[in-house]
Length: 69
Image 1 (cartoon, rainbow, N blue to C red):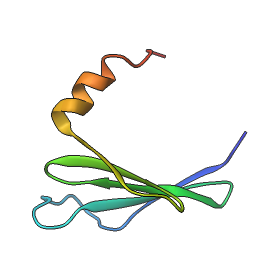
Image 2 (cartoon, rainbow, N blue to C red):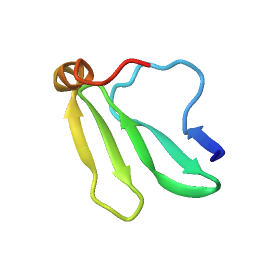
Image 3 (tube, helix red, strand yellow):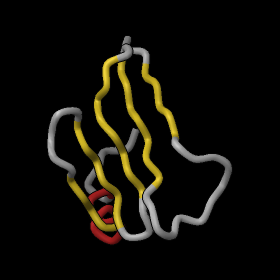
């Protein structure tokens, strides 16, 4: 099973106003991508690829389609 690592660039709790909070996501030491959270969107930037965005309302709609586990 892969060992996952997640790093956050800011601590502690903060109000996101002018810049995103960004998480660096790794699996077995290899960079998978960056997850960004802002007031208006969630973004995913796969390693070596373009950033993708989804707003909070659309994310809520999409999450209704995800399987439960």
